[in-house]
Length: 404
Length: 208
Image (cartoon, rainbow over all chains, first blue to last red; front, side, top):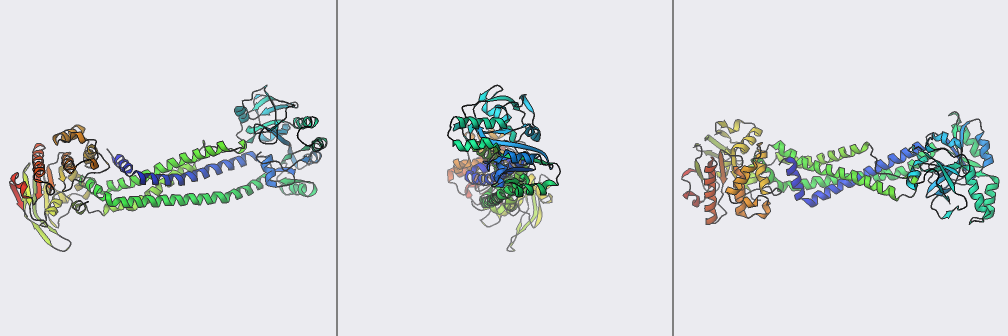
């Protein structure tokens, strides 16, 4: 028997009110924690994946789409660019490193990326098992791909046309797994890397068999040798202004800066995040009000209880603490529950997300969550302060002589 | 030993009430008689340290109640005085046994589980230890509140109109219970009442 037991027994006695208050706090905290977690994760992903890439060159279209498709591997590519033109840019003196990308196929939703050895240098990739690809149709797979698909070194698999789904499988050529990459915690964990030649070969064969696609279109693609995009690293920061302008004005391609585009993307999402944040704060406010009202109303009935406890020898400060503790306990339980809800919800959202590349997870925590619990405790304290002050006003003798 | 001297209380409306001096030896049993409105409850509140008098002193076993700090007085009351109210106020969210334990905790004393059980047994309500106040009859509640008043082995047991809402049979039972329990627990007893039925059991009276 202690203050904790008295408070919790009283809370249990008023089940419905207690549950309502806990739910209100939990929802406010839950929404805030989802926002914190999601925006931190999205931000991290955006930054980590675009770390060393200064510019992306691809076909004309939406620059955001170009960034999303060739760095984050989320959206569809804007189109193809002639390999000839790309080569010219790669040899430009301002360019320190240029990585060609040929996209178009996937295996179980994991994108097959045709590229060359500069790709692994750009991302600083190393091998966990096996080796990098050397010949056509050899692949090196990311660590997440290896875990979820169960592919091992020496296994073969067929790629499917398109960037998601396995509707249209290239049955003519099988890829051979040569190696598995070490986990980098970025997008490369979810990619299947091969050389550009393999990607050409896939589509060549398809053309020869007269497979689904229009023959003429396929032929053109192969004859002219096209690639999807070019990831570029500058020699010096000076090129930031010159190079994109040169690309956009003098070639038939477009240049997009990942830093600028992800900032733009974030400002677009930001509006939604802000709205939700205010909504969550509003709910927390309601929770505080509800706790205040229920404690305050309960004081009318509890005056007798408290007067009796005074008679039994409890000091005013002890009872003050008792009432405060009740409010704080409710918000603390609510805040903890809210965090659990937030993490579970995000994990659920993550498991329903189709693109494996941008997956959100509820299994990580961010330091701001401690603040959420603190905010909960502060709200509980504020809401129970006024009801608890009533203790000092109660006239015990009078309260107990009067009838209930 | 309890002693009050030159005690006076001033009501809000300005009426001044003087109380005659009173000495109660250890384990003595007294009736506090007076018509309603004569100040019985006021005097009980003063003796139990709930209401500070305008003048005078209350000595309980040599301690002057109103020289203690408010906190010290609360604690002193919890440890030395057991109060039984006209209505048996119990904490509704706690079961009977918890209500008894509460008395020890609030007074800052250790919980004596065995004693609490034997108190309930003495009052014939041992079977109700795990029941909640809402499940008890008025008479049972009255017994629990007597048990609660005795938990901390008080020197003084105060009962305010314990029989006013009871029929003859139950009133007799309550008075017998109070007098015998006070005797068994070594406590002095004050019963405030205007009920003539009580006078058959206690002879010492203090008239207001």
